[in-house]
Length: 421
Image (tube, rainbow, N blue to C red; front, side):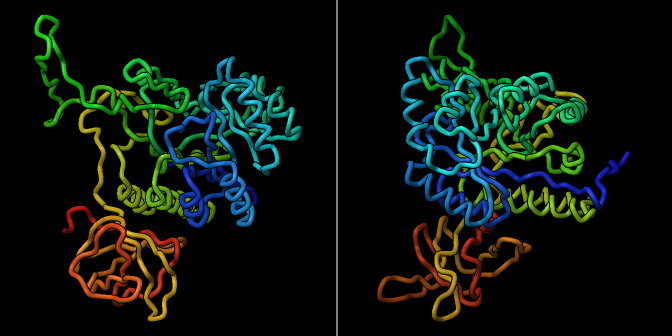
């Protein structure tokens, strides 16, 4: 039976679209493509310690830029903190206390008092690392002064509805991105295998690796546990994608919809945010039908991803989550360039090449707020400091002009089908 939204035109509250930003470039793309808020990490105490992240000076710049766009910026401090690190955590909070973050995302409730010691009116958001699945837990943190809870990915839809109905603070849910084989990301596999603790931002993504079987009496004789032609990914998980059910999520009254991916590029973030922003706008207008869903999912397919799943929230059975067959990275499109200079003297934007493309290729241009469009490359002109010359192909880090393309938005994403050689 088709879902009937309970949203009325008088009360069509659309939740915040919360987007990851691993660096200042990605942050700018996220905001341009329609994020309401971004979450970012400094150089310490967050769960993406192998990402580029932000220095204190860069955090200041990021927050200023975000507020200039009338959007919000949240800092993630959701790593596990050991006893010996408490003085360092205290010092770090002191060093960033004058940056006007809109909220602090943590997973250790004991740290609330450390933050409040320096920022008395700080808004606190609790991370999904807490694996919250009921309103009693939400209420416990409400009484501790928490403003928002990010709910565990393992929650069922009906339970989410009841939890939100019985909660008095903001509720946030993940709608897109990587899933972990362990409960809401609390995984020890990486630490046991590599010494890198996933709960402290050092995950080696051991669950994504290809594995073999070795018999005890015959060391170094490896047997391929064939599930794929090139091996078996026995721990590998699918990627979460709740876009087809987005209207049902909005109908719960959820406060924020969160996209995973602070290690992702500006291309991934821009494309994903473009889709979810468009979907939320269509829901607001009452036009989120099957045709638009299918079209938007096809846009998400152009991002690098594993097979999508609706996860625990909407699946009738979890067999899909247990089946790892063909769960590998899919890259049907390549990210081939960004706009380096929006306007040039000859009326043609300069493009910074990310991946190779050639004369004759059909490329696709995605711009903030606009539908993607196709363009056939008929002439490639490489621009050097003091001269220009024609070429048959463009390579990474080239600066090129494409005859006939004209000026495009500074935050354009340029891509092409991977098999379009």
